[in-house]
Image (cartoon, rainbow over all chains, first blue to last red; front, side, top):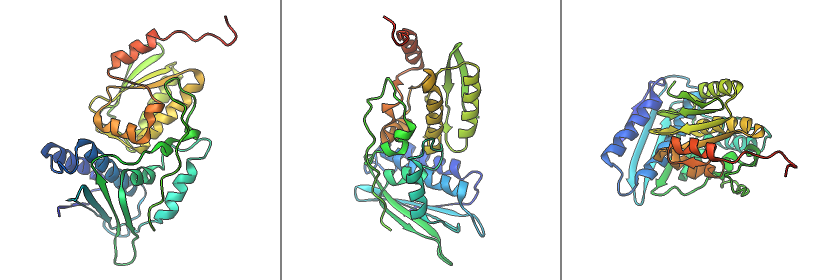
Length: 175
Length: 123
C-alpha cells in the first residue's frame, strides 16, 4: 500500500495535488477509478487536508500521512495526522446548522463536501499516543450530490435555474 | 494571485480563474470581485480553462458574489469549465444556479443577445 508523508504545511496542498497530477498522468488507478473518480478522490483529500491546514492544532511536529490503494471496485484512502484532533460529529452538526443561516458563510462546508465525495467513511479521533485518522472509499462514479451544500438560503431566483428545492441532508457518517 | 480580470464592457468582466480557486485564494478573489462590482461590473464570466482545483471555499465565494449581484440584476456564469470543476458542479448541482457556456465568447455573446428586461407593468 503506497503511503506518503507530508510535513511542510506551507506546501502540503500543492504537494498533494502534485501527487494526484502524477497519478492522473500515469493512470495509476485505472480502470478502478476513471478520471472523474480520481477528481472526486482529489477533492475529498483536498478538503480534509485544507481543514488541517486552516484549523488543526498540533502539539508537536506537523505530520500528515496519506495512504491510497485500489480496493475492489474502488480506491481506499486513509489520512492520518499528528494534530490534537477535533470533535468530528460536533463540527459536522455545526456545518449542517450553518446551511440554514440567512447569510451563510463562504467557509465551513469542507466536511459536508468530504462526506458526499466519500463512501464507507471512518473516523478515529486523536487521543494520547494515537493519531487522528480518517478513512474512506471513492468509487468510479461520484455517488452523492451536494445540493445541500448551497441550499435555499444561498439561492436567489435565477433565469438559468430550475427552481428545484434542495434535497435532504446526506446521512451522517457512522460514529 | 492566479486569476486575472479583463473588462469586456463597462458592466461585464471575464475572470480567468487559473489553476485554483480554493481556501488559499478565496479572500483575494472576493475582494477583487467586490472592487469590480463597485466600479459597475454586473456580469461576471468565470473562465475555468485549465482550472484544477475548485474547493468548497472557492465555490462559497462564488455564491457570495452571486448573492451580491442577483438582487441588482447581475449574473455570474461559467465558461470553458474544466473536468475537475465540472465534477464539483455536478456534485453540488450548481449547474442549476450558474449557466455554463463552452467558451468565454459564447458567454459574452449570450449576454449581448439577451433581451433587455422591461420594467414591471410596461406593455
